[in-house]
Length: 568
Image 1 (cartoon, helix red, strand yellow):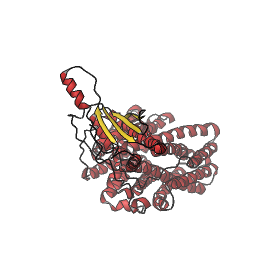
Image 2 (cartoon, helix red, strand yellow; image 1 turned 60 degrees about the vertical axis):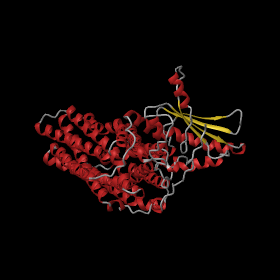
Image 3 (cartoon, helix red, strand yellow; image 1 turned 45 degrees about the horizontal axis):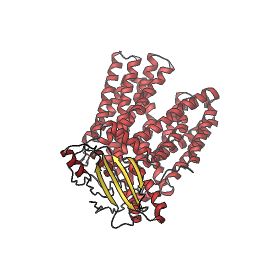
Image 4 (tube, one colour; image 1 turned 90 degrees about the vertical axis):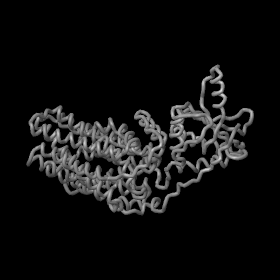
């Protein structure tokens, strides 16, 4: 017996509120919220401590060994964990309580900083012990940042998310503009051990704020995904989301070119401007000042420009600034160019960050952000290495002008791969925790599950039907379905059958719960093309091997009974 889906119809609730669509929130609107304000301020202090610690670690390595390659390994020890662990950290942040993960990672970094400080004071610090402890502190950061980035969307309304992300970027760059200078003063006056202790103290404040944060969490009816499956689901979702893939490619390209300005800034201060540490400090301060200006300008620019328009403006400005830095021999002109660079840096990267968050539902947002972070950091790492090598062989000016061309190409690529406008998407689940009734007893391990949806399509509508079904199949695969196929009945040309599988009943429930309200319009359009009586016929069955026994015969017969479910 076949039964049609009683509530196959869905309502498209993907309309955004005026505030969400227009971006009318001011740049400082998130700071009116006490929770965000407290966390933002504590994060600013924590970032400041981390930058002070980096100065202390670099100077300590220089004091112990005195070779440039070992000093460079300090920064590698900080950045490498982000490349290696971000995706796993994102999967964990999507599956466990984010506040606990934030607390654990910050507490871990406090302990490692204290150990580093004590070892330095005791005089037992060796180069490899320094690198090991620095690497462990970087591991804490690798687990902290995806959880923090995903938590922003839990704290502020969707309409304020762009401003909140811009404020986060602005805060970090504020710390970066003064952190190295403060770190240098602390190291010069009290030694590297004091710098490590300051980092621990700065992070203790953030631990206290996180401990007081009473985050409201939604109760989960499904068990936690295993780490390997969670990672695979994140990679699958991102790889099958064209809007996110575009952001990854554009972010990596921008990072490749823009990283040269930061990586080569000490060389610019010494060789192009003929200065020393004080000149380098002025250049860093100019970049930080520009970063703050970029954070303040992000909201007004979003009112006047599209998302791609903001990225294109930032790319052109950053490319122009890189060219000026490469050709200038005047301090104030170079500082002005670095102000422009800092503003462009924050505008571009915060826009990419927001685009990823806006295009990703909450169940997978930390994983998407971690993959974005890996792509951007990977572009920066490759750009710093490649353009640094070019500066060593072909000259500093050639490297900076090449960087300008790469950044400018990011604006040109936008004509073919624009960053999508996703402010109006409604990515709330269409059927949250939907577990339909079945005639056959099932549990979460039951499977494989085979689902078919039968349509009756007139010949004149076949072209439109195939186009819509191609998008529907992408959504199926994105949300975890496998072996997605479309069949046509040879005996009746109007009959089309969509078929897909999931490994278990649990994976089927996960699959249906991941369908978003923004997908509803596609389902309605497919239903409108169906010309048969009632709604498309949906069958959900269990795959079973043929066996010969009375019990198996009874079970097999009952398992062929189709059941219904909204939308398949």
